[in-house]
Structures are given as C-alpha cells and as structure tokens.
Length: 340
Image (cartoon, rainbow, N blue to C red; front, top):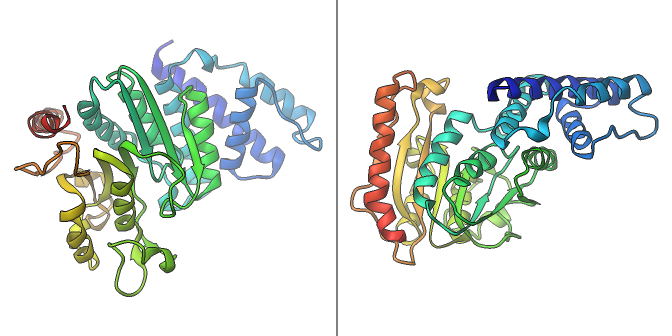
C-alpha cells in the first residue's frame, strides 16, 4: 500500500471512529478524537458507565481492525492525524490560535533546521506553543534523518485538550515527546534547549503582573504575547542555540515593535526573516514570516548579511526550489561556521 493510501485509510478509521464516539459520548470532535486515539493505543474500546453502548463498541472494534496503523511510518500517521484535525476545525469551530501549522510551512521550517543540526550526536528541541503537535512532530521526523543520536523533545501548552491531542499524535507516531501543561511565560519546567521551534500565537497576553518581568513588555496595557514568547525562547536556549519561529510579517512594524527592537540587539542575533508567499493568507495583514534568531555565546555571531526575502509562489516550483537552495547556501556560509 502506498503512503498516500495508508494515510487515507488511517484517516477514514480515525474520522469514522471519532464521529461514532462523538455521538455515543455526546462530546466534541476533539475530545472524541483523543478517546479514539487511546482506544487504538490500548488495543481495545474503553467503556465507562455503559458508554459507549454495545452497538457502538462493535462498530468501533470493526473500524479499528481496518487499518494496520502500527506498520505505518510516523509521517503517514502524522498526516492522517492532521486530516482529522482539519475536520475538527470545521466541526468544533476551533479558534484561530488553536489551529495547526500547515504542512507546507512545517516542512519549510523543518528543512531549515535540518541544515543547522546535521551531524549532531544529541539534540534537545522545544516547541514553546506545541498545540496539537503537528509542527513539532513534522520537524522531528525530518531531524531524525540527520541527527545521529537521541533527540530529546519537549512541548509546552496551556490548553489541556491541545496537549492531549499532541500526546495522542506523538504516541501513534511512536515519537517520544515530553509534554508539559503550563503557561509558557511562567518559569519553564523543561531543560534548556539547543533548538526551539514555535508557531507563535498572535494577540495580547492577559497577565500584566507577569508581563512586567520581561524587557519586551509594553509600558501600558497588555503586551503582544508573541513578543514575550520570543524573549522567553532566547532565555531558554543554550548558548549559540537557534530559534525558528512563525511570526506576523509585520512583526517589526507594529505599534509595540519599539520595545522588541530595543531588546533585540543585546539579547539575540537576528539572522533571518523570510516572508511566506502571500497566496497562503487571506490578506496582507494575516501574512506570516519565518524568523531565525540565535542566542549569543558558544562562538555565535551576528551574520554580516541577514537573510531577508519572500518565498516565491509554491505554484512556481523552479523559482521556489531556487530560493530554498539560496537559503541553504546562506545557512552553510553564515550560520554553520558559527556552530562547528
């Protein structure tokens, strides 16, 4: 069976069993998905207080036998989980900050970091805003091909439903990830990391009493949460460590950008800012970019030529591949020399 066929077969099982449980347990699609994931991992349908009933248990048992998911590779499983999450967005009307990082973007971010971590014998990796885990597991799948030794992966989120989905997804993919339920702007309960990836939520951080502990905090009113998370990420990186973030394209043009620009020179090296193709976004205000920051120390230095630009349209494959090749060449000439 081809990988695409396996993905579709597993999605069919995940979706139909989730929909069956959703009706049987009178719950949301997301909660039913977590339940169906537990059933798959445990090899049996869990029944509590006679729910689901015998008819639903028989349906579920039959469904679970239709896809030999344990023989599928992690990427096939991840893509099937992603399809289920895309359905959940419609069914449960999931809010924007809880929606998963699109695969195209996850692959680009993963490709950028594989060049930087190639040949490492050990790597610690953190996603500060892990959500459903799609970005983190997509990056790990790519890193596994280039990191010779162990990858210690951590994910943080303050939403327990999102974390439960990330746990289910990583378990089904057989990717070990330590997930922590906490506010990512409190004192972190995970070790320092060599690499941080994050699709940063956009909006205001409501806890002003905590925001004042950060140099990027606004003088009055709430602070942009993505500014605070960038500062937190730099604090959490090991010396010379790299952060790759999905941020608004207008990051340095917003009304709170002044504090961020004041904090940046003494705390991080801005190594790259790459706008994603505008066609991916509903309007110019929603456009995102990939930001590459490096923590000072361990021989790291500010590159002479910051990588700035915009990815060509994904529809123009030759131009897109040429642009990616230029990024790789830039990484090898600038960032890799610092990290050897």
